[in-house]
Amino acid sequence: VIDDAFKFIRRDDGSYDVLVLDLTEEWLGQSVGLEELYRFVATKCRGRCSCYIGPASPQSGGPARRHQHIAAAKKFLKGLRIRKVFIPSFGSEQLFLYGGGL
Image (tube, rainbow, N blue to C red; front, side, top):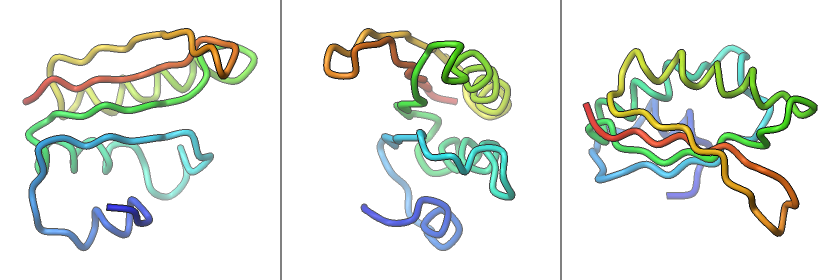
């Protein structure tokens, strides 16, 4: 599905095997939050997700972004893992969050 994520979350009544997200846009911390997103993952995807959450470097806000995601996701998901992966085409380490279920 390609759509505005939060419009889709609010109107959809289906369930999914997994949710793959690219969460690099600057909507984080605005009126629609990460808790709503991870609540959706818990109810619609049985807690399974793979999220690209952005650059890991302190200069790009990586530690704060990591903390925001963990704080929101752990309220709804179990088996959380954060991985820092060097992506050659980006030339830097990037953060990924994985939810392993409920």
